[in-house]
Image (cartoon, rainbow, N blue to C red; front, side):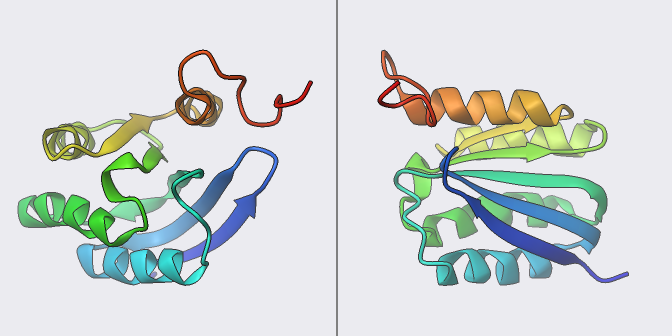
Length: 137
């Protein structure tokens, strides 16, 4: 099955949630990045939570290197925090996380959805700031 996804903004958490299913390739990722841009959401103050637990990845080595370069097309590039949840962590997903880090992108890989949300929430709050949803309480 070709890749499909839903994009939903969660304003209380300041997260752009992307749920994918099907087979993800480098070409699919390019299309997804364009759709994220079209949402018009200010990614300077929003984290991206990508749930790939129901997707199969078909990325070659060059796809892994090229994919992070597409993040620069997003509004705030290297300052945007991206948490990706996979069904399992494999060597290629760890390699992807390393490539992103080496290119200066704020990307973390998880198998636990709640841990991914917690990481994004802490990253968006910044040091000494209350997490999103707790501002003003």
